[in-house]
Image 1 (cartoon, rainbow, N blue to C red):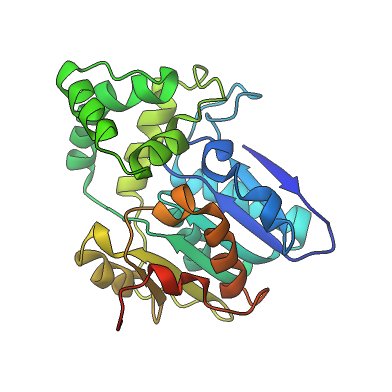
Image 2 (cartoon, one colour):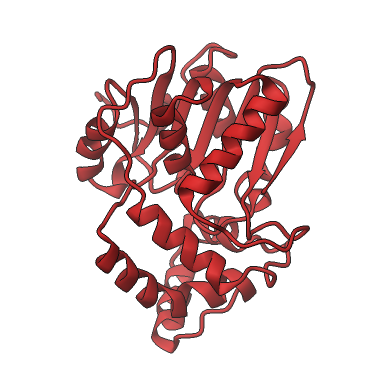
Length: 273
């Protein structure tokens, strides 16, 4: 695991956690520089997904422990904020639940927080690999009917699908170093690693960029796992704010962390909500 830091050391620190099998540049490349106006930016590059290392992703718990150790060593165990993109939200939740480091703001980007038993998780991982792994490693969709479906979606796309796909496959980064074992481990481990209910760390605000187009069930799920989360209900799809509107995403994050005044998210909310 590596952490890439940007910006002035004197500024408050924000950690950025990528999504499932994603490269940090693909998820956060567009927002690092504008974030530097407000923060010292620390991008986590997971074991198995960094092209400068020969590693494999272990488990969510082991990776969380490494993150905690890094924050303790480099930042005295205290950071201003942590943002988790998709799967990265599981890391934010685990850090908040374990209480081994302190963050003032924990922010989840519409994470699904899916969990299952080991048997179902193994089955889902096995079914997912033939589709997901070739796309992650080489940008290829191997299964014909899936490729046809993807081509149709891209032809009808208003910008979200292509932006989201680029976040996953990171066009300007060679992802061929990623092993099947790393992808399997991360996908499977995320499903079986329990996230406690009613997480309520002292001195930490939990914010969730709730993409309403993901579905109604997630509101209940967020309130199940966190005590009093602040839901920012956006009329958007999964991680659409980050993928399609990166400048607005930066402003929303800065506002949440009291680094900027305003309500930049207002234009993405349903009127009257």
